[in-house]
Length: 118
Image 1 (cartoon, rainbow, N blue to C red):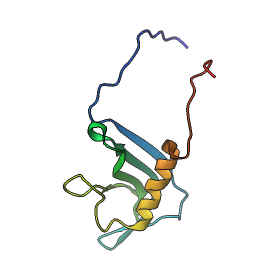
Image 2: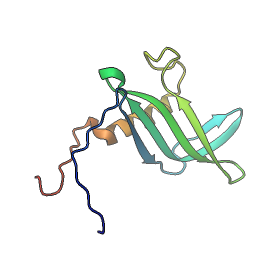
Image 3: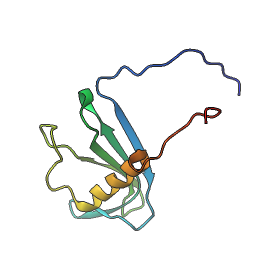
């Protein structure tokens, strides 16, 4: 590797955010908007912890295939308009995607140890 790095980086955000991407198995989820069905193949779920509050899912973006074969991105806002709780009427299947992303982010105790530090 032809790269050198020095320093001790520190994150300074008051509103830390983490995005977790998931590849979805084709045919396991169908999103319908305005009567058109879309077949998502990827989801990107954004979690945030504003000002030390607990982590919450705030948005899910789905990369999907249109019926004509083209690509589309569908975005679902997961927090209500006052940003203090989940948005009403979000389909259960989308919350299942959020749960999969949260699990991938470490909710089941996945930890990372830097190489040579174990």
